[in-house]
Length: 379
Image (cartoon, rainbow, N blue to C red; front, top):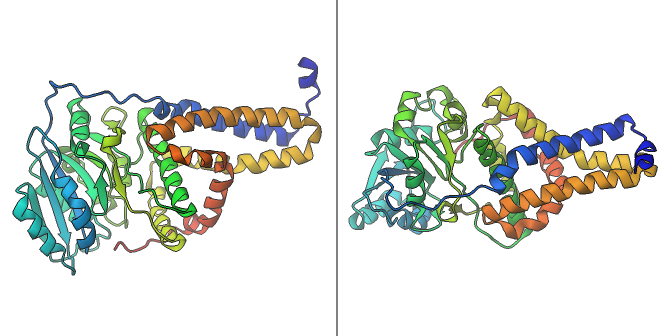
């Protein structure tokens, strides 16, 4: 064995390849393993649950509200809760369908907006109105096109607030549909969640997803809400959490009853536009978050090309190089497969074999968005 190692040519390219492997192993063994082996404790019957206000912003969402709002209105809760729907200047029958729901559900509170927030793009203005109008001090946010997984969705978040946290990060997967695009959208969503949930468990929360996110109203008001990010198109979820989340005030909720499902984009063009909008906020993250995320993505994109080039240039070392890459691949596959199971996405396991190819392609496609970061309008 020693003779074999002594015969290895440790050229700069080989050293770079080993360095990339070590970096990726660090992210998997320090961050992602926390989610893979995270234990979601069962509820204790004697918990003193918190009253919660569910807040949904809706702009021309009559179809989605008809399908998904009922589940939010029939949550099983031992204590009162309210559902606030902010009708953001809709021109369809959104107000009509909301009035119909209110006849049957006394816990529905409708706020109708008739004017836009000046110089405040996106949904930060209607969301702020909804938050300030909330009856209770604990808030659970989702979107009009999201369906809570079960009637226990609210209870899952109520139990988390009992333990003294101010912020609860949830997971919002996309519905399973036929086709390769659907699988990749879901895998990319899982990969994003793998990062922000794992970072939160490591005491470094940096973002949340507004489709399934909860926090304390008092914290929102004391931090002056979205005032510092009102000029940014989006950011009502990730940038706000990036500003206020700490190791001590943030936890996660990944029980499968706590998920909210939403419809994925049906075409590559529509999905591309969606991701293009998401890239506009990353530049506003705290520096250490940007560094860690960028370093991870860069090394992830380089590891396979570097491995291929090293195998071509140093054929005599192919056993050594293949052993390093193979060992790394097995460790990463085990950790991320466990995480897939945690987030009920295990049918995507085959894509774990392809991620070293898929993510470089993903970032090449979105490179103009990463560089220029032009903002899109929110509809």
